Length: 243
Image (cartoon, rainbow, N blue to C red; front, side, top):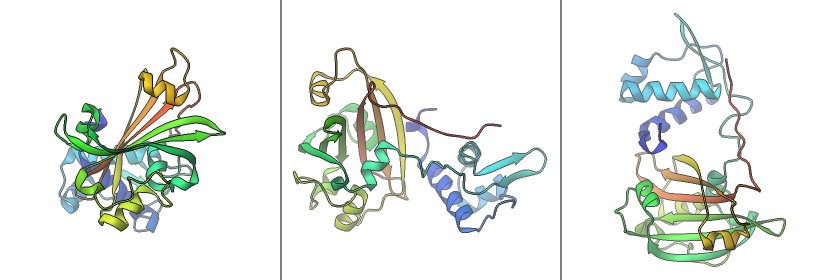
């Protein structure tokens, strides 16, 4: 299933149930509310509930027992919230925490993929802040933040200096917007000539491209992030329960 097709309510429901488990509202060993109860409480469709429960089960938050229902296991030892995600790291960590430089900051035409994530018109305009991050003195990743013009206005995103706070915190303090969840996609492609040059990539080396769209609690797209990683220097690790 493409992440672009997943309704925003699906991610919101996953986060809400995770918070209830962490707070003790649903303690380990307790029976999770039924699908019908969740549908009635949150006013969502059955496919949305089923998709959210599937993710919670795959991540190890709950387990299903045939004929009995779904039981809470508790917070997994290594949950999705704890795994390092390139897009999430850029949205939450201060830019000053990494070495690098801003290579582009300004209004530009939005590529089709970013336009789809932002629900923007094709060939529309948005603000982009692109930063080259260095690891051990070498180019490590190229990160681009795409923000609708009305959100970018009145912020420090145009600054060539690294921001002393995460993007989410900065936009919340300046514009009053609050990040609720991120929908992430990972793909592979060959770099453009400019991308290969900036990242110091050899001929024939592909990119790992991480795309994320950040939404508020109502499902509105607030910004999109693109993280480009040379495939010969990075690997993306994940962990999930089986059985």
